[in-house]
Length: 356
Image (cartoon, rainbow, N blue to C red; front, side, top):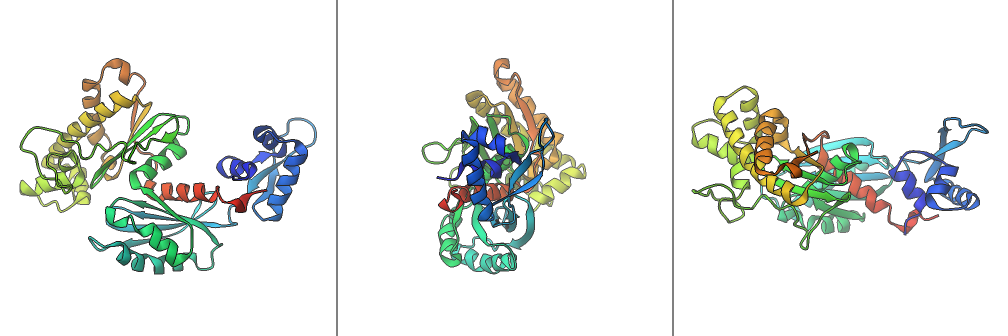
């Protein structure tokens, strides 16, 4: 079990010894002794003086953020983003790599390890690593990285880590949040009572492969047809524009067309947003979240996307469901990478090495 004092300081602001004792339910003597042991181990230190409240000014205690490094990997959208973070989640250095299409876990391992080694050169010891994954071929990668590098490695679905980062950084007061990633593909993650909702098979929020819309049903890479992903994702919109004679190889090209005012691209995005809004309305009706956040590349279109999506939700849901509902685009950037850093730190806070 993690030392509660260290976890408190790692996840929150700097605090005085008196505040720490009160929150952790410890005597002042025990608190002082444990802080001393953590300080001797290089894990915490005294910082600035707290705001005076009468009497002798107290010092604020905080973690030593550079005692260890954290590694985060984002393996989405055909790229690898590798970040080295301090324990307070300050990004120190980052490397980006292009991944070959369809690369298996062994190929990814050989590509990633040299970049990871370069990133860690002359850096504090690595406490752990976490990766955001979005393809089945990546499922074996954490074990391979663990064996090759000798580091603790954990992973999660990219959309779950995007939701985690957005919630912790921008909506910590919202206990019920739904996050929909709308990019080249679609994904969804749900936070209920401030925690990720997993479901029996860790597949909660799987709206991407529900059938939506009338026939004909376009084929989906999952093997089914008519999936939401095959109608409202970035790759599906780009496909339809190409079929209509518009040069649009991928999602970035779709965004560029919309930003330049291309009428066909804007109409296709509006159609996709209405379909996505219908799926989000079902999500809202079942879960009744306080906040619905739209992230991913398509969120960069702002009101072009949100206008149709909001209209579909309010048209489909009764007022008692949407009362107080906040529908926004994501505020954070590089959410999958940042979420992986949060996951790596969460794992670091569990080992016995932080006991005091």
